Length: 397
Image 1 (tube, rainbow, N blue to C red):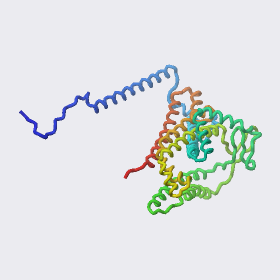
Image 2: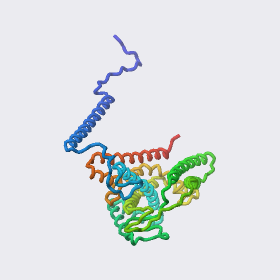
Image 3: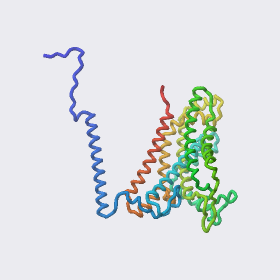
Image 4: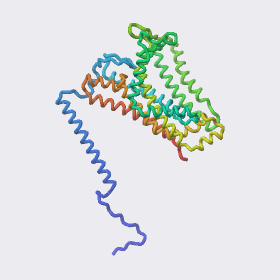
């Protein structure tokens, strides 16, 4: 008879497969994925069968056909003879233009208002508080309607347009008309030089911080960055012959011809998105600053820093670790809320696709395009903000 020796390891008891949590977890996941796949297959096959029964075409071949409708505000060349694909691309670019400008302006304005709410000046803090409460508690769509109505009715028609700056800028209910340089091939190279300048400024900033941490000597980052960002396109412009021909707006008939225009729909949408989102950004900034220990402000004051210097050099850099995660949600919101542009007639992605649906009848494909576009933009914003959040996170030694 075998006797277990003292101190020997106990034998492992075998667990039945249905009682093993690892195996059971894998089985459950495989079953769930299989059920979701079956549901998706049923919905897709049923939809395709119904479309075929009703003799409705499916697929994305319609994107190569002529669109046949006008788009009032475009960033690239477009005409009714262009394809549906180009019309949708115009809408995507218009959406991106509003989203990028809205994110930048809402961040700046929201930060200023959030800091203003913490001001010891009673009147300034109350004004900022009323601003936040007014915009946070009224739906964005109502603000868009209000701003569009104010802008469209605040100015006269083109024939009675308000002229400014020696008859070079005109304000009317159809937009703001102003001169722009005539298109020239050198402008594309200037844009490339501008992007190179931004990249160069980023590396200069990074090098300057490493140099200061190593030697303690500061470097004029701001002036150097502005010099390279502005100087490179200027050098390219001079090397290209310094083209200076301008296109000037002129009243012909019932509207202006030449120059360029900022239309009231775009202005109302951008103003509404910026003012509405900045109210939420202000609360995020305020809460991030209040999350810091009051000893940080006292230490900054003990070093002789002014209130502005303490905010810029001590408080805001530390508060970023609290501010950035919720700020990502506001950037996503401002991008998705731009779809309300259809309510005031701005030709964004949703408006372009809506016209395409009415003309082609292929709603499923077009809705999928909208979903894919917004999903791509939102994931890109999230990826960038997550990268930035990891970059500013505290690292333990």
